[in-house]
Amino acid sequence: MEEEKMDENEWGYHGEGNKSLVVAHAQRCVVLRFLKFPPNRKKTSEEIFQHLQDIVDFGKNVMKEFLGENCVHCGEVVQLPLEFVKQLCLKIQSERPESRCDKELDTLSGYAMCLPNLTRLQTYRIAEHRPILCVEIKPKCGFIPFSSSVTHEMKHKVCRYCMHQHLKVATGKWKQISKYCPLDLFSGNKQRMHFALKSLLQESQNNLKIFKNGELIYGCGDARSPVADWRELAYHLKPFFFPSNGLAGGAHCTRAVIRELVHVITRVLLSSSDKGQVGALRPGPWGLHVCEASPFSRSLHHQGKNTPERSGLPKGCLLYKTLQVQMLDLLDIEGLYPLYNRVERYLEEFPKERKMLQIDGPYDEAFHQKLLDLSTEDDGTVAFALTKVQQYRVAMTAKDCSIMIALSPCLQDARFCNPWLRIK
View 1: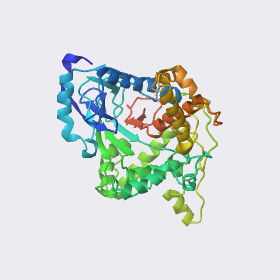
View 2 (view 1 turned 135 degrees about the vertical axis):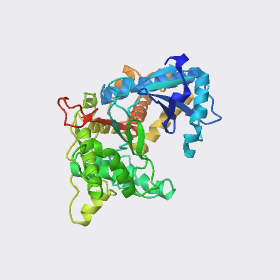
View 3 (view 1 turned 90 degrees about the vertical axis):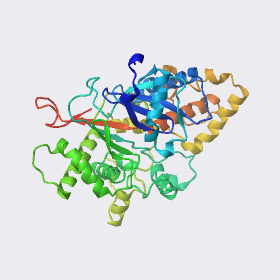
């Protein structure tokens, strides 16, 4: 980042989560990710820098090793002019959701992460002069706990996502329960995957967003009816899938466009990507392949049919690799919590051991190697407990990750792709 050229007016609010906020550059394919903290929690500039560098190292030496070189973007830590950060904070404040304003952007350290803007294709540093469609999916946890530590019978039948749907509707976060179930998406069965993706499109909540040329055009709302939303979405998507066939407007066109989108996303999710090291992970045995709360399963049950079993995800596809990392949650929180307490008690007695045990990093090759120990037989040691806690942390990262799929019309002379879509 060139400090003398930093202008807050060239950046716009892009989104935020619980821990960080992201702004995007208006022209270049880059974003800045800032940490957020409660108003009364202050950290030194050195602590902020180390926190961000740990995130970069975790992505580079842990997640990239499991998911593959081309599937994880780690970014870099950059230092920014403090005046630029302060003015940027003021500029975007009115765009932030009220529910997220309980935490404030870090404006004191001047540090942020610089990452590629994945809502645009990254062929060049400057955005290409072609329409870009990006679908962001948060698939969530794709398996039912298989650990013998689980004492609540319901957790062996219903997935975490479906249980949380009832909680979020009851507390007013969402108006209605989504028909999406992660186990359908992770099944590898195209019929179940199509149902899952259509359910996300009907009730996206915060698990699906669609961007066109870097601008959000769909997702994160339930105020309007799905019918109205789908018509508007089809209007945006039609040039990508039916550029010159004269397909008429109306319900038929909308259904056809949505169907094509679902088929393309399914194809991408099942396609092989570059190699990661998930082959070294064999967490199991598998639990149930079907969630009893899935509307897809219930509808077939009412018809007297059995839910199709998972067809099996191709081992090279991103969904398979993501699921394997999620399944590093070997013991469920019920089995893990006593081990966490063991580590906590040890650190209370020997606080100077924290660094040697790599509690807070560094996230290097040695840290990654420890994650490959999939034993579940507790030998009573702190080392065993700590390994399971660290595996759980990595698994939770995979359970909350986003998959970004960028699509663009192919050039007429492009090889090895269908006539209109390029996938990255």
